[in-house]
Image (cartoon, rainbow, N blue to C red; front, side, top):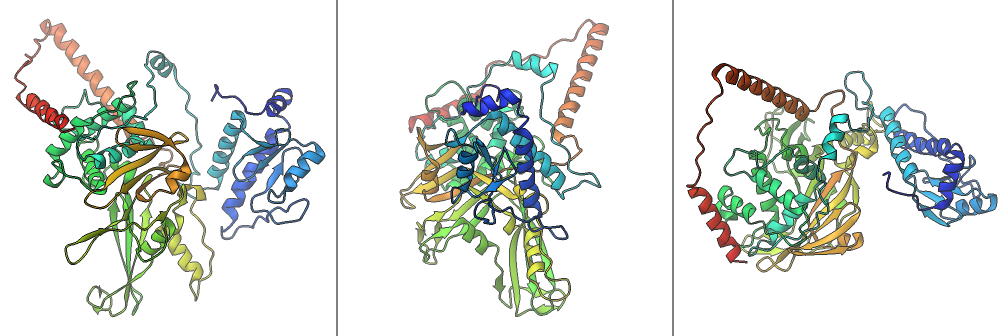
Length: 558
């Protein structure tokens, strides 16, 4: 951020002359007030914060613009905030919700890196005090910005910085557009990017003969290289043919969602830390969530709950509707549905219940939310069709209404009888449930002769990927596209407070083993005058030659 400069000379002059003494306290006060107000809107047993009113029209403000030179607040819709700034020569006012700064002399919203950083620090500090997520009796662990140690500084000085562009097209190797769009979405996944570019898995040090994780590491290396030419993922496709099912092998067009799930499973199986239970590999740490199914007997009120792991959410589309929205699909997904008398047998009633309902909810939200719209429908006459109904999806979404905790709290609020009517509250800041869109996959054409493309966000810019062709696009074009799959990343990631991350413990353990091994080797050399190195087999390479032949065959089809 040190290389960034303010877009407004007036804020630069204000901060340099007065060192921010007049601006900073008021700015922090407004931002902190908004965090407290958001947490207290529906929190039970807490004094409600009355909304401020416009100093001109006395309108109750849901999104006030506060003057940074006095204690007044005004509305934006009727222009009273601008009028006050110009009449009183109070140059700056701030949007309490977003922290955006308005300069009356520039007559525009402005950007200043110092105030932007102050806004982030103030919001985090205020949310730490408001959160209800606690470990024992401790409050939320304070955020500590990373600062490099002497060892880190030395390592960074000798490091070669990658270009970090990630805007590299992928060659179509013969109806492999399904593979290209999924790989582009994985490459632009910020959590996977940090994992592989952070050298958590290095293909040069891996001992597995066939490893999908190694192929992902090679892919990230190629995409983030200096070479702008399209890259052909031949080794990735070759590895897929060797380890995947026969249905995904060959040159036929495949379903992008099926390939996405198969790729996640293969990365999981070859990743460090992979287990069958409570897996903490990079795939489950990124995509894994939990769905809860509640079956309620309407006769006796008994509820049976089942929790299932999930890597994505598949939503049905209503083809007879003129328009679908992601929110409407999620509401239908979490609405109760009636079960037939033979579909459920109540354990409490000990007999089949003619009245039972089943409801799905999200028990645990994943860090990255992958959503598939079921556009391919299988009919009874063995004929399939594609549902081309448009789906409106937002650039950001709050998933709180679809979680198990919030849905139960809502039921208590809407219920009748003793203990009913208690207003629900979010567990922690509402921002913990917010997601931002970063990739979209589209299917164009029909089922038999269609083509996949995708959109992906790099920093704040959107790009359209059509195999080897990469073009700049806009967010409005992305939201207007007919999505098949959407990928959202959590705005605030969860963490376990006051605990050392497992990967740090594992790295320290490996370093300790390495030091012990080196110490034993030195002791052995001191006693026996050195040890004879094991012979190394050079040549042969029957398997390697075969792999190269298969890759050559793939290239020959391009």
